[in-house]
Image (cartoon, rainbow, N blue to C red; front, side, top):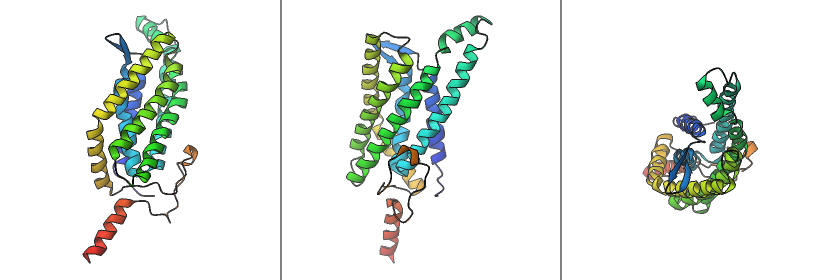
Length: 245
């Protein structure tokens, strides 16, 4: 298994952004009658990192990040929910804490469904389109993957985590508005994605193509067949070295 210098940082940032989004899940902003969750404003950064991870390291390492996110998010939500339920009448702050987080477990349940579904959707689309387009048209792959994955996330997570706090009509408003916003932000973040992908590829000397890999989410911790050379960056370097001899 190769040792990567930036992969751990990407995983850490992804977990941090996810936990921040969990903390903001009940906060909504009203923009001219359109409701959008505060978590929706931040969450596009997570998909940006997911796309960068899959683009550079391939589907399997990107998939490992997904299960790490689920584990860390579950631990975070359980701790917050447990302490919200302990001695809720202890003082005024405890009462407010209980009112806000007594149903926080819904976020955890939503996570178990929405995070794997949306992230593996994102990783699959990025991976397959990278192979199909031979590494070209990053902007097309990035936008299409984001549009599909964001839709999967919102339609699975929000009905579970927000249904007890908003009416059906409000929920539809929130989902539609948040999806539109996230797609717009993804497009705005595209230059950042281009830059990060280029920087990370140069640092890691890795440009992974998922030739003949399994897309089973349950097998992402198994190493690939090393007989298949998938690091395009390394192959290009070897070709240039031979050309200079």
